[in-house]
Length: 173
Image (tube, rainbow, N blue to C red; front, top):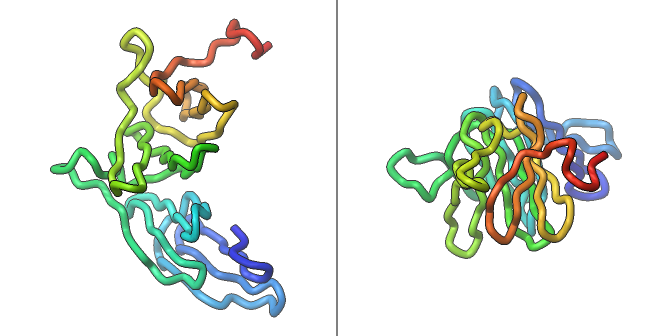
């Protein structure tokens, strides 16, 4: 992620994030040492950092931590897991979070609450694999959910119903 013309945010597998100045070719900051960084995304004026085990960090462009959003097993409106694989903002500015072993959360920014959509599906069908590696928007009405070993699922954004992508689906030949 490039936070400005000169600063590249580099997430690592075991040693957090380095902020690298592309003009001077020097590291300017080291954030979250020892952490596994899985995703870095800019949403509004905050950098959202997904980690493996420490939830989501909301950080400003200078690297100051503004918030740490984590799972609380006693509160169903928190992240469903602290192991984050992907963070995605859809065209309507909804924030979606793909988690390890717990599916997808959507974030209500006005209420600062998460909703799990893992077990909602067409005709009782669930997401084909609860480890969600990536998220992307296909069109105005459909979000693609890429899973670890379960293929791709289609999520209807209006109903929040999921359906596994099958090769016989029209338009996917």
